[in-house]
Image (cartoon, rainbow, N blue to C red; front, side):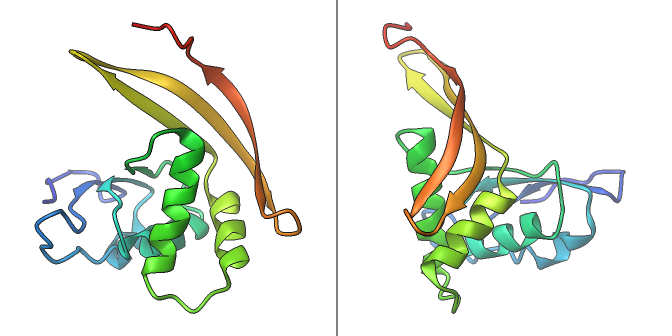
Length: 144
């Protein structure tokens, strides 16, 4: 569901495919905005989001369910592959590394959520098939 925003360069609250399998919203119309915030990425809409990120739309935010920031990178890669795009696996991972700057993992504990990990994504090495990232913040394991 989209919300009305007075600034034509800001897009907030685009609904993507949900667990009820309602139709995904095409992200292509968002290509003209300066800042975009999307809901959870779960499937084929991940490629549209990656294309948006690759065309220089800085300030874009989205969420994905994963058990860590590193797992979020892997899950985003899987979602892009599910889109059926005809790109090699390593090209997709290179595009992800070129497009994402920061991955923030939010953990849920009884009654609260907190930031448990912040990673800066530097690059992807196709020879080793590894993302190069640096931890900016790691919460203590005994954090309540």
